[in-house]
Image (spheres, rainbow, N blue to C red):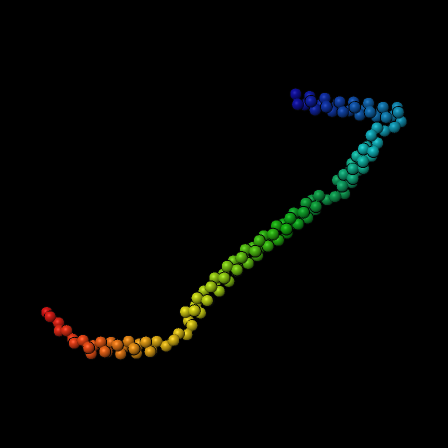
Length: 135
């Protein structure tokens, strides 16, 4: 059934072409002249392209261009990721350095405090007698 539809469509188009050509020849003028001129020009352009363009080289060139573009985009995204990681690490290092500097900062001498505490312990022993062990 499908083959019959294609055959009938082809025959109808052929009959239409023959009738239209006979009508135009009898009248001495073309129907739809501007449209058919544009169509003829476009068909001639397509025919020229098909005859003169090396599609293998064209496809190879396009594939190289696409691969270069994808490579560029991947490199750009990688660079953005590295920069983001760099910013995070820089902040972490800055934070850790400020903590470390605060811990290392020079303090007041603890000698006076230790001396006072030792004197206090000595006075405490002097005022309290030693308690004997009961066993």
